[in-house]
Length: 287
Image (cartoon, rainbow, N blue to C red; front, side):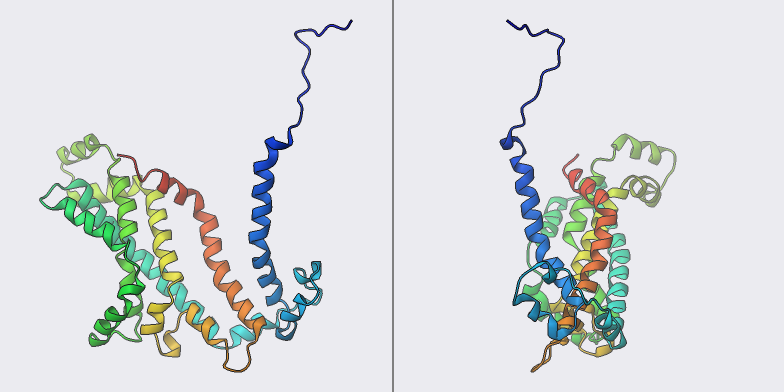
């Protein structure tokens, strides 16, 4: 008869059910990645071979054996490169001005107590719940009356005031200790100094999260640039991607290459700053 010593290590049995959530997550991740891999592979093929790769599904459908960069070279020889630069410029200016406006509004709603503050905040919450496309057409008519059509100002202004960015920053500002603000005021610091020296340095994750919100909203916008930026010199990336599809012939190689470029830029930005964005969302409910 064998005895089991108390100090002897016990062997753990591997339970398949224990690892099932991880297996399911991996399978779902692969299924979501397959279309992206196919688009990337199609951008490295001649346009006539993109759909032909689907006739016989195999590993060659996702890994091109005759990879070429001709689609990207041809793409940037046209107007697409200028459209991408326009998108980068418009998104960068929108983030800069939008953060200034959103942070100032959030500071006022979190620090100052005035009659109707709750109503103002409720209107801001309501503003980002309404789809922008629902007001794009009447707003474009107003911008045309102001002679802002085919201007960078017309493309940038609607993205500056973002209710979600104000909400994120206000919730973060509410977590700043009031004692710190009162001590700064006693020392003679102005409200502008409190905003610049206390709230802004402490709210770096929230500012990055709000900036990503502004950047994503502006980068993926389609209807507004289509209504305002009608000239080729003021077209943005999504509009240039739509114009690549001709009436009779579509070069899917160039279309896929343009889609990869417009996806890669925000993907790099989001992956680089995702930790700060997650932290800002997690802290948005703190008081």
